[in-house]
Length: 353
Image (cartoon, rainbow, N blue to C red; front, side, top):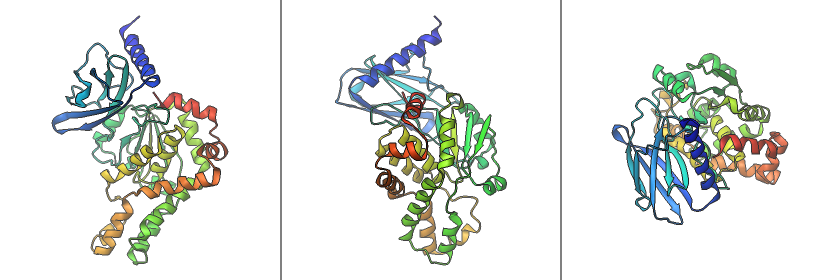
């Protein structure tokens, strides 16, 4: 038996142990200056013992014989200096040699892209965790620099799902060509409609959240055919890693990401958390003509800025509508997206630890 098989087998064994036994362990990874990472963890209930930390540039393969750190569990954190230069780092934490959790920095640093992040590390209602390095969401790849393209290749992106309209794609073609790209031009309320209202001062600050709710509700309710195709792609394990992108990565990609996480039974507070992360990487879109006009008037600037931020109610509102209409998300997945319980179980096998 070769060593590579041993590493993967042992990692799998740890995950099965972790999934079936207490305690509940939550881990986060934050980037620090000079290439360092701060890894923090909590266990419920608190446990004693040691945690070993392993590093890899692949999220599903760790050298279990070479930990880069070992600390007491009750310390709750460890600062790590990454040895994986020019590659993304994934960390596996092994608690008392029986339970393992993988973590990574959620936001992937990019030059021309923003709102680029990994959808791994979220927990579902059964305590299982979405896999790192499998599914990403981002703003349009039409802004990718040469360095960004190198990063995308390093991540091994195999499939890109582009949710922009045909005209958006023609005006701003992708600058990174994955082995396969699927174009699903979601139907939506053109955001330029809102900019015209802002400029005419017909739209006020109080209207922003309502308009955003209407926009996401429209996206969710009018694109079942495209979402069916999206899930068909995700149900093929050979298509991963997958990247979903739209213009800003804050509306169409957000709806798609929320649907996927919901299909995995990810806790809804974590779906909201992922949605709200957009506000940490907000940028004005380079595709908005004459945006300087909005920044010259104080009132328009406030409305314009609020339009680009995301709000908790924007994502909860359309999902609450689905629950009211269908009685449950399971009913919605079955009827509108043809995503049966059997298909969802297959998706979970692909996407969850």
